[in-house]
Structures are given as C-alpha cells and as structure tokens.
Length: 279
Image (cartoon, rainbow, N blue to C red; front, top):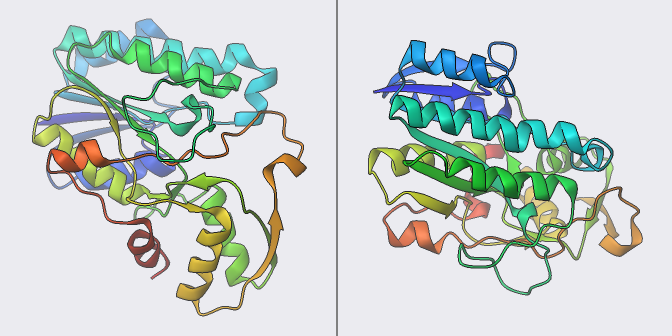
C-alpha cells in the first residue's frame, strides 16, 4: 500500500507518518513540498505518485487570525481539501481528512455525536465545516474530527493548549486554565493509530469522531497532568466569558467516539493517553 501524507511535518502529520511507516510505502510531504491550494500541482503530484491513500494533515488552524483572514482560512481549509479530494477521486484513492470540534457551537451538556447538527461560530469553524463537505468529493473518503491534540511522535513537534499546560506545570509556573470549557483531549499517536485501523479495516466511508475517550475541563486536565508529573500545580481558574478572544470558542465541545468503538476501533481514555505522553 502506498500512502501519501500531506502536512507530514506537523504535529499530527508526523504521528501519522510514524504510524504508517512500518506498514506501507509512505510519501511524506511537508507544506514546502506541496501547496494544497495549488490545484494543478496537487493533481499532478497525485497522478505521478499514484497513492492508494491520501491523508490530509494540513490545516489553517490559527483560530483568532482567521477572523481577519477569512480568505486564507478558506483557501487552505476548503479549497485545498477540494483539490486533494479531487486528486484522490482521480487516483481511485482513499481520502482521509481531519476536521475539528469547532464545527459545533458548544451549546450543549453532553458529548457531540456524528448525528448532531454542526453550527460553527467562527471563521475557522466555518472553513473547517466547508472542508468536510469538500472531502466528500472523493467517493472513498473519511472525515475524522479530532480536538485538543497533545503529545508527539518520535522526532515530531508538540504544540497546542495541552502541551503548553503540561510544560508550564513542569516548570512550576502559574497556569491559567478554563474551568468551564469541556473538551476531549486526544493524543496524536492514538489518533494516528485509529486512522490506520479505519483505513486497513475498510470501515464504511464517512464521518467519525476520532478522539480519546472521556472528557474534562481544562482545569481537570491540568490537575491530572500535575498528579502524573508529581507536581503541586499553581492554577489560575478562568471563566471563558471573562476572556476577550477574537474568535468565539465552543464552551462544551467534547466529542463521543462511540461510533468508532461500535465498529471495533476503540481509543483509550484521555487519562491513559496523558499518562503515556508524560512518561
């Protein structure tokens, strides 16, 4: 099997490359290797390499910046996805695209399922929702929603809110944490392993929530990280409504992975994932 991974140098992309490397012929393309907003270049590269699977790990994920740069966000998160989906369709390849919890408004009190109606509240969220639609241009496609990514592959990058919280706790710093924003923290290596399982088991094509099991507030996440690190945390509780952010954040945005579990792809709970990451 030949797997083309676009955005291979990013946090999730590096994890996907690592996961597939022992099981397939991997073509890892960093952003500098292929501009997904250049449709002609995307079609030409896919025609030349003839992959069996194309995995898109590229995203415009600067949530606040997108409010002032909607064109940039849409070029990457919508038009870039459309180009890749078209290339996958032409090549007869499976197309895997990652989306986000930001397609929801967060006005709920229980984890979202794939059947729930999206209602994005930010430019970033809208662009990612449109990308989900574009991914369907590939007849054989998987849209995998991930969120609050943490951890890293060997030699990969580690970034994001979860990574920052853990680093600041380890350094003994005071850490501001939301007490009323609920998420499903997800280890990039678990998401990558689930991705390979989905493709190799040929699950029905469509939409899945690909997150670690369970959910927590960022305060609960920080307290758990501190316990695993053997540190006494210095936490500064913050309410979402008390912070001025350029783009609104969904308050309750946990995702249910029950659909994947029902098909035999079970992701560990977030506490287990965090313990492994910190170890």
